[in-house]
Length: 480
Ligand SMILES: [Zn+2]
Ligand SMILES: [Zn+2]
Image (cartoon, rainbow, N blue to C red; front, side, top):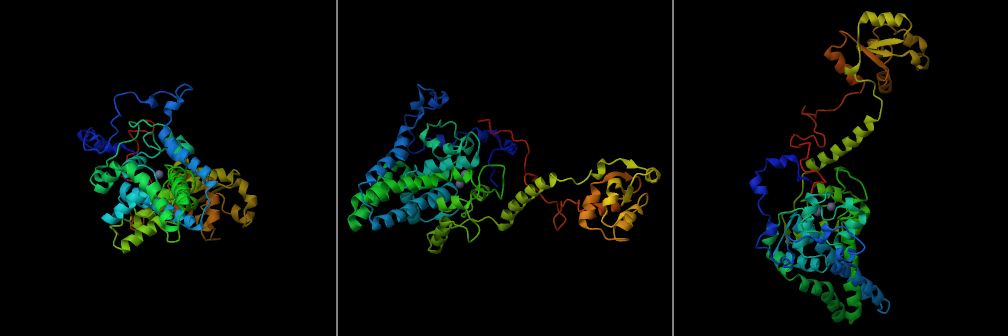
């Protein structure tokens, strides 16, 4: 799986390749902002003060994300909402939302499927209508988000706060050098992506405002309603909904696959984001065209891609094998189980118990200590004799003797609970009484056994213990 963070294993890569200038800096890059000079100090290098705070604000984004919707809300007070326009606004909300989720996200950022030219043009157009930047810009940041999740190089790290991950990273200026580098050569080779990037403002105005206005105006004469409801206010809702993938999906819900990073699964996030709410799964298996893997889970983006594939518009839909998905799920369950298990008293581990001679054991028992040997392990049951469910006399009859057979069915086949309880009373092991077979059996019968092998006898690999995993990352989250 692609790792979230660079790990020590990456040092195996020849440094000459690492130090190559990234594709981001290539001269073939379309439309780089000519005013940006990487050598000049950036405003974000200075702390925010009362004198300079307004320089830190990205006023263009504030106007686009908050200013225009605010004007739309005011205008809506004297613009009646006609039902045809309401239906159209909702339909266009879904189209433009899918432009982001199925287009920008799953097609271009993750290449989780391939689309033919007409579908790519459609997705680039309606995605532009969501007003969230060009495919190229969006996908570059999103790839950095996956590669550097939760670190300083994550463009919208939730570690900087829920509001920051939702909108703060856009309304405050960002140092382009801070964002982790990613390879987008594939996007530079897609003419649809390059065309949309070069003509981004035209695409935004046409698909964001003019097209929805035209449909309502030419369709049923509601020019103003189309502009306000299907244009401006619909943009606001689709933006806020898709921004939730960066905020809510890293904050609300469960982590069935990995809890070491912030992505989470929740049905509410899925409803808000056209199915992008199974985000813990998505970060583990980012090139899977699905986010929800169960049929009953809400993922209209997945359903759309599937329908397009049946219509011949999409192909090469990628899915991880369920064996891989289940391995992740089981490792996470096991981790939770191990956490619970570690809080329980399982008795002193056998290898930490003192070794007692048989004669010493018998001697101490004669002197009044309630010691019982079972399977080579000595237990001090002095305080338990009065509580023994089978009565005092039966347990006393085992004191100072080898009670292995008595305990294991000779007198009574003790319960699993009894084995567990007995193990908490361990005080020693008897020399010579610890032949391998007895130890194995004692472990088995104590249910103290750790399942470390699979059915075929191969070791079970717990999360993070894969042989390929290097435990000490050379680049820590704070090193940016
Ligand atoms: Zn994410
Ligand atoms: Zn993603």
